[in-house]
Amino acid sequence: NAGVMQNPRHLVRRRGQEARLRCSPMKGHSHVYWYRQLPEEGLKFMVYLQKENIIDESGMPKERFSAEFPKEGPSILRIQQVVRGDSAAYFCASSPAGDYEQYFGPGTRLTVT
Amino acid sequence: GNSVTQMEGPVTLSEEAFLTINCTYTATGYPSLFWYVQYPGEGLQLLLKATKADDKGSNKGFEATYRKETTSFHLEKGSVQVSDSAVYFCALLDSGGYNKLIFGAGTRLAVHP
Image (tube, rainbow over all chains, first blue to last red; front, top):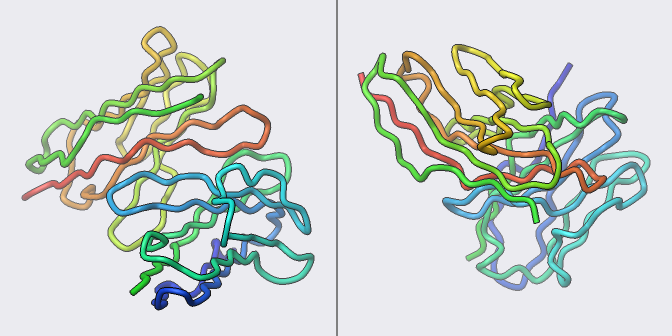
């Protein structure tokens, strides 16, 4: 059973460009969580999604950030008009319905130049 | 709100030394508690967990006991190895209804031969 997959693993964007981060949950998992890790800090919750629904986006910045988890395909975290402060590692985790244990992907390291 | 505080690193030890990494939490009720480990360039792996007071989680020689009296969940290992060098994160499951994890800032462990 493949683990949580994220791509790309590394992403470089210039200021003002868009960044799209993808997350494929483990097989059978219908819940996806996104976390952000700033340099030398712990992970901070961003958003929790189920298929076609955003359940909790209390950790998402109000502007430029959006997330989706369509019926088919991976979950996408989209950052528009990136700024240097968006440089971080973005981790996705998934869990099956009715289970709180989260399994993490390897992360996408975003660098904004 | 709920929060997790970990001892600051880095922690530097010689091989076979005893390890303690302190973790305390602030939360309403009795949340489930976790230790995650992050090896260089990788995502987080669940190391151990405890779901109620006085539970002891253990894995790969690591142990942590859920102490509600002191609101603590300290990580211990009797004899560390070079391969244990990593960043360790303490986390609690936020019981606000959406199962998001709240992480401490992480403690970097370096073990030398």
